[in-house]
Length: 203
Image (cartoon, rainbow, N blue to C red; front, top):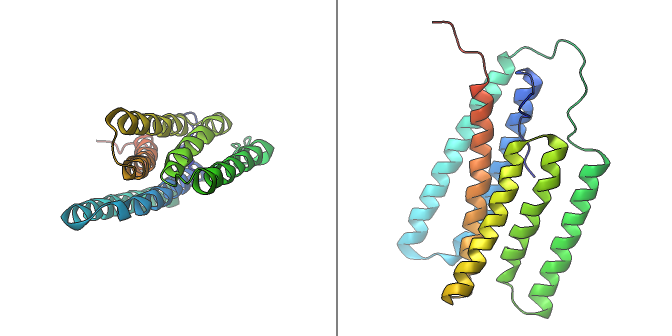
């Protein structure tokens, strides 16, 4: 799950803090997908990809720290306003549906069809799809783009593997590293959009 600043949110401590939390979540889940993909690589390629992943993590951590610092110096919300919907019944329903579909689908693929490599593809589809209703709940274009990007990763993965007859491990490589890239990009985009909305110092 990732969360970002709504396009019409005020540049306040609360709004910037919300963006920092969303970027942190995106970074963590991106790292999880990245780690799941690493066992498919070997030798020099694995070292290079690991180094690149660590560099992205450092960059993302630095960007989040910068955003949190900006949040500390930003003004607090001066008057009450309707809270931005970040939870509630709709969020819980979406989360429950996601967890059930992931559990049932992956259990069937892994234990009934004996195709564990397809579990990564299925997970990418379900995680990507669950962001679409949440993007409306959070009024977040970044989350909508993230959901569509994950669905695109799943589609491209299927086309590459089926179209080229690639090895089964390709399901894991493309799905995991593709999802990690999308999540990390969404985290950095969230920070970038938040920092761009900060008042610029007078020349």
